[in-house]
Image (cartoon, rainbow, N blue to C red):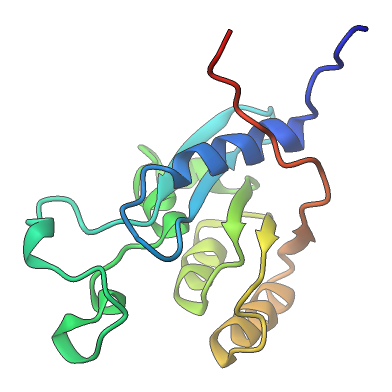
Length: 158
C-alpha cells in the first residue's frame, strides 16, 4: 500500500503543532506557522516568556497579581510575527495556529497584512476577547478557517 503525501494544510499545521511542543506552559501549548503565497514558511513561534527574561523568576501559573503567567507570556502568533526578519514579508500570508488568536494577537495579525488564519481549537470562543478577535478579523477582511485535516502524527521511529 502506497501512503499518500500529507496536504499543504497538514504540513503547515504539523509545523505549528511541533512548534507548540517547545512551550513550557503546563496548561496550554500553542504553536504558529506563517506561510507565504508560494507555500514557503516565513516564520514560526510558540507561546513562551520574552527573550532575555530569567524564566525562573516568572510564573507559569494562572495565579493572580504578579504571579499570573498572563502578564508575561508572549503568544505563539505574536512570537511568529516578531521572529520574521522583514515585517512586510507577512502581507498576504496565511497563519496556521493551534489555538484561535486572542484579541491582542489579532491586532498584530491585521496590522501586518496576514490574509488568512487557520486554527485547530477555539476553546475560548465564548470569551469577550475571542469574540472581539473574530469581529476584527471579519472587519479587516481576514479569512478565518477551522482546520479540517488530519492531525499529523510525527513518527520518530524510522
